Image 1: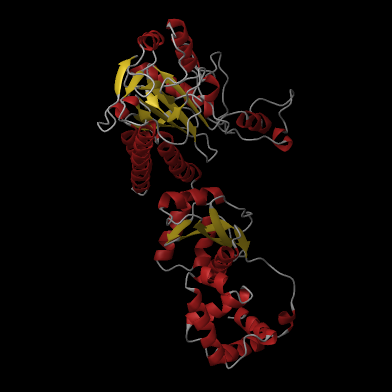
Image 2: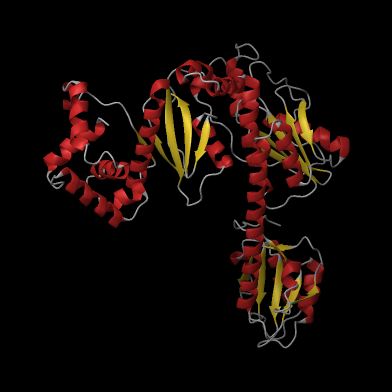
Length: 544
């Protein structure tokens, strides 16, 4: 039977639909298997419904297609085509065409193992479909609630003094099974939860981890006669989603026949050929392995007796957190950041502790998710991982990330980013302001990323800085006591006087923008419609 092309909603057990007293459905043939699930409902009166089914349907029919005098041969062919298409069950409506469900149809469904449900005259097919969608919505809500609660608990565990064991414990509890972290050598570093299946499952999970574990220069993979990449005999097929890393010609340098074993070319070629996750089933236990994204050879393995909706998302969140945690542990950069924090708390200047972070010049990135929800620690960590930095701070609706100055900041799907110029530690506060302004402008112009980049020499650079600063202070003195007025004027001028885009950038009503600009014009005693006045004010605002 073909696999159903399922929608992105949880399936509903057929038993749950039968339990709806308002429908009055009754199973009259076929297996009473609680594992039978329905992905959608479809009504068809075609004698051969096969071309119109995707699989997983509850097919609803009133028997209009049944010819007079139809016998066992007709119903046998009809039911066999439904089974061949992957239909989950058949619902037969009693009245107005048939007073009862044909006996030959009951026998055919029983013979082919297709659940047959009697739909009473008082129940319309639309009511059955609506009940199915309601049950799907309830299942989806329960799944989202479960995933959200798991994300929060995993993020809390990652903040504990023993983060790696805590994350594994939470993951094992949420999945109802075993969670294991394998090191670059392939040996278990930490684990939590009961071991379903004993030694057989433990060995199979370790082999599955080798399928996705990327080799590292210090720990190259050693081929064995029993390569674990294909599933071993007796297992169900392993699924390897297409998340392999692409390998460019430059990465394959040294991978020719004359290259020594364990050379960088071998490692890159092997890495490119490996999936980031793999799954298998052994002794009825669902096994999944995730390669952690730090490139150090760590692998997360899980074993659970059953697979529930949302398990993959929960395990993926844990893999992101463990990637950050193991990356810090293995490289020692976490100790450097800890030392930098202690020195700052004890009064050291940022310039003194910057070398402990791994660089002298850094960029500040302000990010805001495109959705309405405020970012949580897990979402913020995911942004940091995408930008290649674990120096992340959640500040209300904005995530701030420190990125090494030599690293290019690219677009991140689902985020709007503002990027500062590379700055030395003494200029980090100014870089933070640059990133905030770039983010506000990016949101107003609906651009996914805007940079506060370097620019060529301008006319304003020909004026001595001291004189320019003094002129700017004098010109803006009437509004400098009100930061809201100065910020509104700056944003309004940067967006060419657009009321709506300024309101979006500042998160205020457009009438508020009009009132503030009118107030600025009155205090400055200036005509803000005059382009010369706008230009002079813009030059002055850039000096503050």
